[in-house]
Length: 245
Image (cartoon, helix red, strand yellow):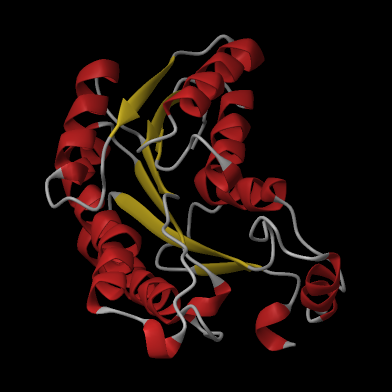
């Protein structure tokens, strides 16, 4: 797909990896729908950056994806503003520490709602627009921990495992007009406040012995959108070899 002028909806685009993905598509001349939940100031800064990078159209869209109607309202708002949607990137994610003995049903439901249910129903809501544009793309930002869960983040890891299943479900349901693929980032952006010793330990656990970058994830998104025209239902690890270490 030629990315110039395409409408790209990136959820969770105000900060962290979502922001980097949005700016990478902006550099290719795409028009950006910048979704946020609470980070409105950061979201507006992303819009300003998009316009500075390429002069392309960009706008902010608020939605609480934990709410059942949030995905549908977001898709409709973006389509009204831009006249359609070409690419959906499900990047918004909830990541909370939940030690096993202290995990509650609310913790579980909250992670599943944002990390697995919302991508499914947002793809459902975007599907008519993606098909109407002639060639649609969905990219789900999962996590290597969906295949190898780690301690103290049970609901998060389970929700990312569910997202990998959602990825396959969507690929089957939306073929052949819409391609659906997932990216599995490894240690790319670590939680704030982590000590240098902890960072070093995580870095050493990868085969490449270093941390990744948000830009590496963004490049993977560009590859899946632009070049991987015979891939759907795939899972692309961007983890420095952490999965097999």
